[in-house]
Image (cartoon, rainbow, N blue to C red; front, side, top):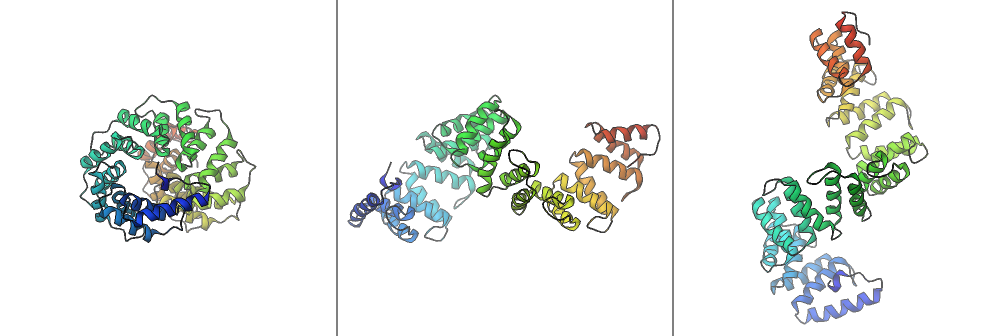
Length: 407
């Protein structure tokens, strides 16, 4: 490992290293110039200075140093210390990749796969990422796993995907560990094994991987692959939530709302669910609407409930669509409008949501927002009854016997 990638707790040691690297860099040593540039970029032994980093990386790159070329390409790629420029990023990454620099080969492959600075070409992207992976570069190993999973530049192959994810995971690559855990959880490319899923999720979660933290919270909440433990679930949801993860925020809010793993606290629930909803996470938007509708942690407010149900509904959330339809049907927080109610309830029903299907059947029966059609009424009510909706079963019996259906 190069010195400039090491973060010593002894700042004086860092300064001494910086001064020695700087002296050699100023003498024209390309390798040390590349080191110095990266030290400026990371703030190792010196105040972070992205423009100074680019200056020294350019000196190294122009002397043909692969490390300098690679890192200069990365600076152009993210627009750090220099204007973002994918073409220049591609140019410098290519120079380094041709010198068999593993990190540059991976960067080049990513740019081909994303069509950044070059015409999109999955096959060429796969070629360069494969070259990098053959040198054991963890990001490339994980990248191959993704390309085999998604069929980018090659036919999808879940088994091959797991193979490459495992190689990267064994190098402690957090994203690969998460994806390997997900593969075990879903049985994709490997026999389903919830215990193994938890093992790999935990490895990634302990490195701060947000999705792994959220999913590990779910595993504990469900008792899937591990003994059910709501407190442990809350712990991992909170870890993700504090990093700004909308999924974790929503689930943490629901734990407070239901008093699972924590004391029930509607105010705390509202806080976290709102944070998630404001990130446009549809399930949280629905939950927030529900809290306003009921008056949990906030004064009951039908208009605010309608607002959040609509936000969720516009993202094709079936719960939001159904409840927005009911609000229009009942004239709660909005003027009664049977046609608008029918439109939203139908969208929920078409997503196979049982309550929506039952309500849609009732609306066809009663001619609410649509002409009476008993055949369609029976069709939709039967769909809900087939999902073991007891009200729908009773309504279906009444319909079959020719009796008037009740609300």
